Image (cartoon, rainbow, N blue to C red; front, top):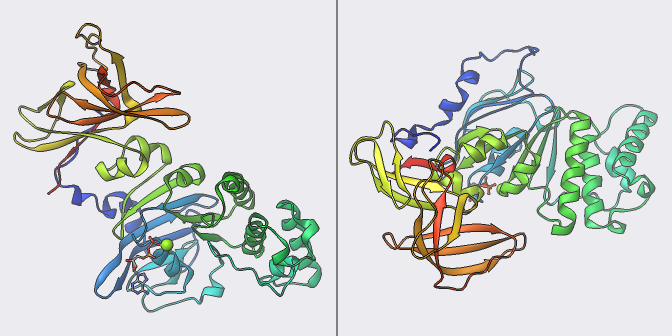
Length: 390
Ligand SMILES: Nc1ncnc2c1ncn2[C@@H]1O[C@H](COP(=O)(O)OP(=O)(O)O)[C@@H](O)[C@H]1O
Ligand SMILES: [Mg+2]
């Protein structure tokens, strides 16, 4: 067990994660320690509903933050307010410590030094690749040309400089769009599901290339995605969003290994859940007792663990492996279904105990017949215990 939780998970408000940023006064001058982008208590209502509900975020210079959450949770709306194409009902947006937008003061979008890249990254069809990239640039023709050549060379498309967008593949157009967005050296890049229009085969390569270029340019990035793998791959920090709120912020490793609640575990992988009732700071499960410090008698708790942390063993004359402190007691189940997933197999078991179904992943090919009796153990250090909400 990693840690226990307070019974009231609604207390996991953004305040708990952003207290540090709440107290700094809004200043008119940049401070050396200011985050590159800071968003404070942003609220946006549509038809009386708080679609963005008290969102606070900050991104250090050169860092990539992924705003990760299911479709409809308010990610794009958040990005649109930061870009300046929508106006918040409450809250402030600052770049390098300078206020760029609150409910009375508003710097227009084109003067925010914020670059944009969306899924339908429309290039101008009537302009050459070179002119597309030069579009937002100021300075002399010579300076503009130098920057265009630098970026197109960097993304490996210099030979297309005089071609038109329709002559390029989807992946190439994507790289031109990235070059165009980066050309004016924006302080912040906002990217809204920029890779979702690309086919799977291209996507990983383009993600890695994009990340390398963003890091070289030193731009701070807020990247919106609903795909956990994409966020894990790209982010220095993940901000997990649900129903308009940020429920957790942290490095990918921390979000994955110290999730805020049951839904946060389930957003990243399949999960197993056992429910139990606390008695004397303990809860009984088929895998023995778990400690639930701080939970009152009678409280219902979920014990949540991922299929990769379930160990399996064949039944040896009705006996499983000996209990260990790490794995607890083994529990018996019958194979219900086994599927080959590529790099691993996913096996579902109907447990003897209370008719619970648990999933286990096993590397490579492991496809036991339905009805095969087996013993399961769980990695206790990889179990999360959360109070049942509601
Ligand atoms: N202009 C609008 N008018 C009314 N509702 C909107 C508007 N824009 C977004 N919404 C609603 O706000 C919610 C969040 O939308 P959005 O920010 O696009 O979510 P996401 O990008 O996370 O998928 C959705 O329920 C959506 O229908
Ligand atoms: Mg969206």
